[in-house]
Amino acid sequence: MARLCASIYSSQQKQGQCHILLMNVDSSQEIGTSLQNNPVSLQTVHMPGNKYNCSPVTPRTRLERLLRERERRKSNRCFPSSEEARNCNGEAEIHVNDSCSTENNNLGLPREEEFLNGVAAARTFLADGCQRQDGRPSKQRLLVVANRLPVSAIRRGEDSWQLEVSAGGLVTALLGLKEFDAKWIGWAGVNVPDEVGQRALTNALAEKRCIPIFLDEEMVHQYYNGYCNNILWPLFHYLGIPQEDRLATTRSFQSQFDAYKKANQMFAEVVKEHYKEGDVVWCHDYHLMFLPKYLKEYNNKMKVGWFLHTPFPSSEIHRMLPSRSELLRSVLAADLVGFHTYDYARHFVSACTRILGLEGTPEGVEDQGKLTRVAAFPIGIDYERFIRALELPQVQNHMKELKQRFAGRKVMLGVDRLDMIKGIPQKILAFEKFLEENPHWRDRVVLLQIAVPTRTDVPEYQKLTSQVHEIVGRINGKFGTLTAVPIHHLDRSLDFHALCALYAITDVALVTSLRDGMNLVSYEFVACQASNKGVLILSEVQHSLLGLGLFW
Image 1: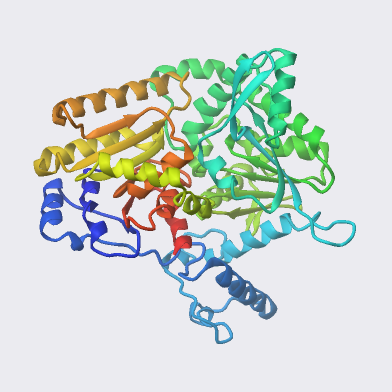
Image 2 (image 1 turned 90 degrees about the horizontal axis):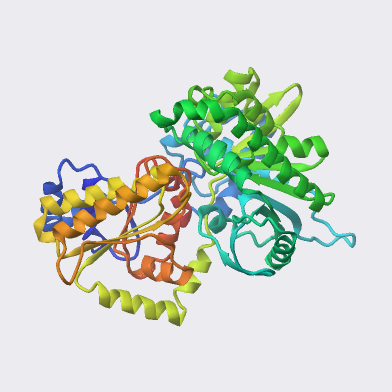
């Protein structure tokens, strides 16, 4: 991690593009030497594409070409060699990199073909119900079901509520859903025991096309803080249960699991109330793994999709769950199961094969004649929203203020939820090591860390917050002066316009997750770097690297 700081000057060497640096430097002393003597020697990786598109061309053109090639393959009933696949009816060459090979692919398909299967599955999944009675196309009705709504509710009176847009990757990703008639079903994040308050909040959320689920404090404690965050979250991120909590967790496991199923049933009841024939129900994340099963029991013809926004662990990790089989079979009730990456989809199919004894196919998992399609769908952002924001006067003014505030210093930025998997303490400690070994940089660089609080009532997260505050205070006391400190740490989120301004003036963005799904901070940073030409440094386990090929 200490090696990451070496990229500060490299952004000024080449104009016209944002750089992604993948670095392996032996010591921070070499970093300082490299910065002074040969800043252009740092490795700049121009993404040729990810393991799903494997091409530098725009996704739409490439997708159309690949779909035509796929149909030709089907008609010939064979797969062409990689050399034949590079030319299709005289069109532009398709570049397939090493990540598109069939090595370690237990589904028996090239990863490019797997991507196309996913695209075809999604198109089929959303194809019906998009025609009006007069034959003209209409927007597909979509019910998005997630644990939390995209807004946070603050009570201002007995029947008065203030709504604010929530922070988070899921909210950011789904802001781009403009071609659907979508409604969002989820928990509002607050306990509302009285009917007057529930009715007022329901009416306020209806204006935002949101439908609330009301969970009491005990349900939140058992379902959300208990089974979701104490069992599933650590397991899916390859984290063990803390030693001192294992006995208590074992004793309370059954009550948490029962609450988890009951909460999923409550979500299903609300979906049933608002479901209309032809709707597509899109369930999100590990909080709602039982929801596809409950919805299919209500209406077997209901179109149900389930998408996971975290890593899915290998079958050897997943089999540690006492409820492993129930969870897998409940998810398999969905028509389409989606993951961020091909690796996570492969882990899921492998778990179904090894734990349930089912058959994995190139299209998904088959159980007694029923096929559940499994595919990878890397998510993205509405980048035009960020580009438009940079032209607003308030954002331009904020950018000027920030440039004046940090004049003469390189700005490094981290934007994360305050979570164990985000690597915030490791990032800050690496920055301290860099300052220790490169004294001449101490007054020339500043680290801005935005740490959005999350799960503040969970003891482990409270410990993490205290740890980060202690490290930041020690470093600022060690290297700071009366007029400047090396680290600016904020325990809160920024509004959208302030965040865009901060992205725009940043020289180096650090995404240092220890284990993560598809972190969208990297996408947001690139979208705001039209004029600054900064540097993006990604953790090697950060899967947004796979999707950044879509930006070029």
